[in-house]
Length: 84
Image (cartoon, rainbow, N blue to C red; front, side, top):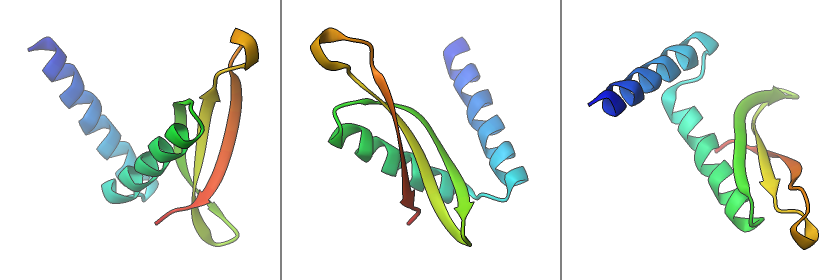
């Protein structure tokens, strides 16, 4: 039950913050889904995703950690794509 309460609290906090920032839950979910797709396409792990406004257009800024070559340190790649 503790896990459920923690997840519920985090979800409520996320929705509250999204409301304060003027982003509805659907917009945040859109960017998250886009981020998951980009991470999968690049064989990496989704590290961060956020919504931004660039030139009057809403975009998703996605940060993916891509495994390094020959077992090296992962590299950070940032993608900016239009939000749907």
